[in-house]
Length: 451
Ligand SMILES: *Cc1c(COP(=O)(O)O)cnc(C)c1O
Image 1 (tube, rainbow, N blue to C red):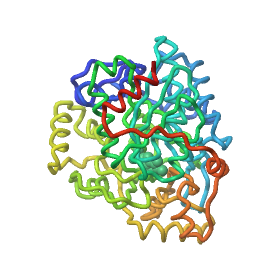
Image 2 (image 1 turned 90 degrees about the horizontal axis):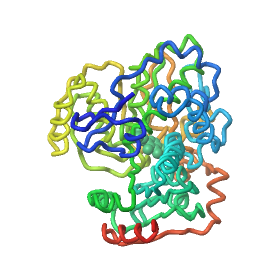
Image 3 (image 1 turned 120 degrees about the vertical axis):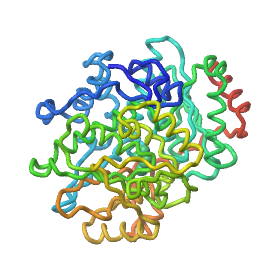
């Protein structure tokens, strides 16, 4: 199994190579050259535990890692989840199930991919005998999930830049209170874009990248998408048989990463019904799926901050399939999109619907779901609770624990959601490494720490 770039100007990579470099040299994203079929395997997978299912699934995509090793990697990756089912599927009413994806260490769905990615990095370090410096910028969830995937891993130093004073206090604590010596939470002045720019500049210095063996942690790594596929298969297997063929997966999304994984499963033969893309007021994806126009706007901060995005970085993967795998057209289209041009694309896929939700409605929906079903949801998950299909079962992907967003949830339900791991954080000392928002400052810091 080899991985090709959506833009077609990079040689095919093995799974490990694609994971290590993240983004292809030509600026494209990696995809499997050919999708394997899973249709014939589903029945045999029905009785597996979550880590076993993940190992079987991932072996199809990276046979270079022996199946037995995959089993030990996934067992370890999901051992720190606080539910024995890892991703429990809860029935809310006759037509609605919620797939709880927030039982990992940072209480958001990104742990599914990043707990595993940390172990894959560690495996690479062992194979190559060379230390790895992992660098990324975050507005909250990705950074904390990456830190918890890498903390304490031998041979890895992780550096996460974030805008000082602009991430939620609990998210900062998740990054800065680990007590792990290989973790560096770095507040920088400015906005997320400033932090991101510094990270990009560091990666632009190829000599430096080689010197400290720098690896990027961001939302486009193929390992993340593949790890996220597993819970769609898992949820489908847990549904009553009569609901499976038509089930609609409803996915709160901004970067198109989560729902892309589900759609790939369908392309591989998972016989499910449809997908609904649920956005907040930053609705570039909703506008695309309703009008066919894809045009970037300005980001408006919302109650669901992890979806405050106007350029869906994983969308390029979907574009590749929409354009029939024509890599030249993908490249041209991406260049036009980046320039801010309005791009109209063929809407041939009927598997997708979309909805959007503003902040006021998010608060109302949290209150209503609590009142009607005695179930507490976070603001991201709330975006999914609208426009439910009446003629089939929906599975809502719940992307974060309500305890991560106590203010909004308390205002809506009247009680403060809590979680033991977040309570424990409140008394731990904060360890941060404030730096100027310049590549020089960050490079000097990394050099000193990696040596
Ligand atoms: C990251 C995140 C999302 C959005 O994920 P996509 O990659 O954009 O699909 C949604 N909810 C939460 C809680 C997140 O952390």
